View 1 (cartoon, one colour):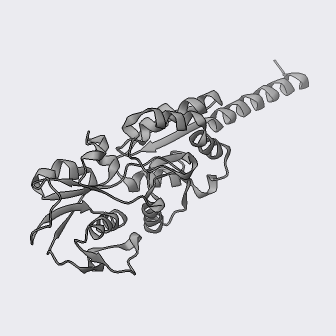
View 2 (cartoon, rainbow, N blue to C red; view 1 turned 45 degrees about the vertical axis):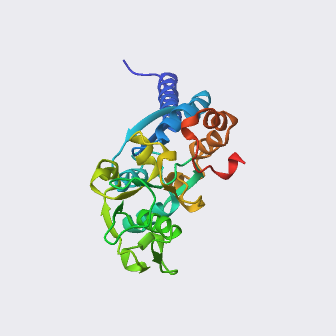
Length: 270
């Protein structure tokens, strides 16, 4: 049967409407990647309900590697990730040749010096072994903690994104910095004298921040951020994520849950 002009027009309009609805649905889907740590719970409990009220659907993706989760954002496989501070983000951008950007800070547990074979903060003996993350920006953070204790000194021209042990200018106690994957540091604590462990890996393993012998000083460059592809930083979903974190709902959630006591808090909490 031949379709009339009116029938063809109706079919075309219905097809266009279906495509428009599908596009709208895609615009309201936010896929977010996480590494181990507290950031998924923060988002699920404190931000996602706010976004769902605005019509968004949220999908959660778990990663074990910081490179892969950033590559996924850059390629558009996910819309955002929540797992890194700006210094690490900069180093990954340079390594991969991508343009991911941070859009809002999130409450972040600080790095801490935790006891292994030695459980008290005492002047280190020659050859004391301290585990540190094997990523340049986070090894730099570890070195800053040790410098604050007077255990070593780093060169003032050190670049966090490219830091290595060659930038240690003084090591009077002959400390051995044992680089290892940060996800392995908690389990390796019995094998070293101390461990300088990122807060997210410590708390996700059930360790308490107040059990650290020394916590790093609050520094904005090491507060984690929500990361999106550079081309998406002005997208509606990105602006709504920012608004969700800055909402009273999220701030009340963080303040009312004591597991976040001791976290480095963004300026919007002031």
